[in-house]
Structures are given as structure tokens and as C-alpha cells.
Amino acid sequence: MFGMEIGIIGIPKSGKTTIFNALTKGNAETAAYAPSGLQPNIGVAKVEDGRVRTLSEMYKPEKTTPAEVKYIDIAVAPGDTGKKGSFSGQFLTYLGRVDAIIHVVRAFDDENVPHPEIKIDPERDINTINLELAFSDLVTIERRLKRIEESFKSANQQEREKNAKEQALLLKIKEELENEHPIRELQLTDEEKQLIRNYSFLTIKPLLILLNIGENQLKQADTLEKDLLARHSGQYSNAAVLCGKLEMELTQLNNEEAAEFRKDLNITEAALDRVIRLSYALLGQISFFTSGEDEVKAWTISNNTTASKAAGKIHSDIERGFIRAEVISFQDLIDSGNMTVAKKKGLLRLEGKDYIVKDGDIINFLFNV
Ligand SMILES: Nc1nc2c(ncn2[C@@H]2O[C@H](COP(=O)(O)OP(=O)(O)OP(=O)(O)O)[C@@H](O)[C@H]2O)c(=O)[nH]1
Ligand SMILES: [Mg+2]
Image (tube, rainbow, N blue to C red; front, side):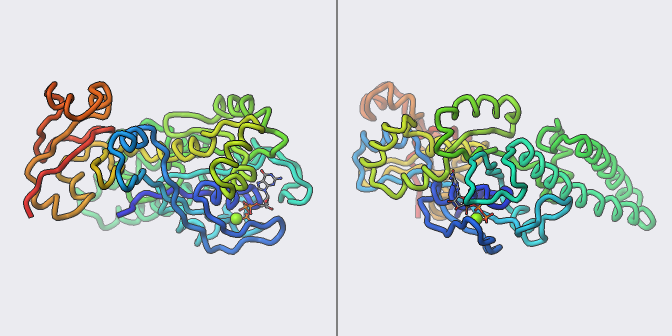
């Protein structure tokens, strides 16, 4: 049921596992010296969504279930970074599968936690990882270009044309990568995207750069973030600042204690939730809601999902026996105050199986079993 996942990467000792723990309220082992094993940590975070909270207050259900996002914390083998092409095959296999990437960049300074390059320099580390990702894509391209070259010897006319098209595209992408333009930034047509869909390129994946600052840098957080955004945000990339260590410690307190702490430190409650939301947004997914006395729940679907496919997310029986969907937008329900008024105003619509579900739709599926 859970397709989408985000890979957390970064140079050794940048605080990946610390941030992973904060995001997923987990307690995977973090270490100042010892190299981490290659076994990735996997966990899930709940996406804080004001709409879910509002629906929950309205319906007072027994259970409230927010959307979730899955994280996988993948350590690079120690000593791997720094020389080109140093990502291990296993690391690349994990990374090839994720739908988006969080790059944890070390800004905190701590003499007890040695940085592999000794000096703290976030821009250098961002660059190192970007180069590694691009390098991996270039290797993929070279390999494919060779195959295409060979195929020309035996291919028929039709295959030849298709391969020539792909070859031209790969050469274009190669040039861009060599000029340090990640694939996500290229304006590719749908046809071009289709042609390279199966290569699991790394620089095509949406990217969130997460600057991991130390407790002593909290006052500069806003300035640092503005700086970072100016340099690294784009259509499919974003950036944010977080104090991983502090956030991880806060998740170990109860809500009241944590709130008190945040107030003292002058950090907004939303810091962690915001990072979860930003990373969820990277995936380009939308949410619809089901609501009732038993449960208010957010469901995650891609853009352009039909009502019957959305029903299938809940249960295949509902998709199979789909009759109609009763739909109201979150905003219409809120503007009306409650469902009874909304119904009187005619805002609850009946939609068929081909209706394209919109972000924030509240849906009640009618179906036959
Ligand atoms: N002072 C300080 N220490 C931090 C911060 N974030 C992480 N650390 C420490 O840095 C060390 C490494 O953190 P990890 O989260 O294990 O880093 P990692 O990137 O997962 O490390 P590897 O998996 O070995 O590459 C731990 O001792 C953390 O407590 C921070 O914001 N401030
Ligand atoms: Mg780790």
C-alpha cells in the first residue's frame, strides 16, 4: 500500500540518523566515531496537516489517521566520499529505488564528532554529493550509449529510429550533467521523460537540502535558510534548516515539556513538522480525506487519480463495486460550518468513477459488494 519513500543521504557523520530519528520518532543508533553499517534504517512519519486536525475536531472520531511518509536512512560506506565514483553498488541500489532525496548537510561543529574533511563547509559538501549523484547518472548514460551503439549493427529500421532518438537525448543530458545541471532542472518533454523513465537516474529525483545546524546556531537559522534557499531551491528542489540533535531530543519529551522547551529556545513548534511537510510535498502527491464518527483519515494519491482508483486505495472491493462518490472540498465544508448546511447549499456533489480527485476532497464512496 505504501509506495512512496524518501532516501536520507549525506556524507558520513552529517547527522542523517539523528534527523531520521527526529522525523520518525525512532531510536536508531547514532554514533560519533564508529562507522555505520550499510543496513539502512526505515521508518515512517506522520504528516501534520491542519485540515486533518480541523476535520477531527468537527467529527470527533475514535481515530484520526494523518498521511504518512516513509524515510530510508542510507549510510555511505566510510571513506567512500571524496573520490569520484565512490558510491557503493549497494548504496546506489537503495538510492535508485527512492522517489525523492533528503540531503543532510553538516553545519554543526563538534570536536567530538570528526568531519571526514575536518573543516566544516556546507557548500563544499553539497557540491560533493551533487557531483557524486551526477557521476552515477553519467555512468548509467555511458553504459546505455554503448548498448545503443552496438544495437545499430543488428537493429531493424524501426528500432534504429527509436534508439537514435534516445541516443540524441542521452547525449544532450550528458552534456548538461557535465555542466553541473541535474536532470531535474532540464525542461524535458513528456516523450523525453518517457524515454528515460526506466533508468532510475539520481539527479532526476526531487531534492531537499537539509542543513543540520548546531544548538549554538539557532539564532542564525533564518538567515542561514534564506541563504540556502537562494542558492538551492528550484522547481523540484527545496532547502531548509533544522537542528537535528535538538529535534531528536525533543521527540523524547512529552508534548508539554517539548512545547515549554521550544518556547525557551525560541524555536517554532513547526520546525520538524515543516520538514516532514516539505519532504512530503517533494513527492508531488495530493491528499483526499474520508471522515466519520469512527475515523478521519488522509489518503495519499498522485495527481490525476480517478475516483475509482482512489477508492481502490481504501479497498479493492470499493473500487470493484464502485457506484458513486459523494464529494465535497475541504474549503466548502469549512465555509458551510458543517455537512448539513453544506448539503442544503448543494455543495456535496455526486461524482462518477472517472472524476479526477482533487487535493482536499472529502469523499464518501458508495459501492456494491
Ligand atoms: N553537536 C551536535 N552533534 C550532532 C548534531 N547532529 C548530530 N550530531 C552528532 O553527530 C554524531 C553523528 O550523528 P549521526 O546521526 O549518527 O550521523 P550520520 O550521518 O547518521 O552518521 P553515519 O551514519 O555514520 O554516516 C552523533 O554523535 C550525533 O549525536 C548536532 O546538530 N549538533
Ligand atoms: Mg547513520
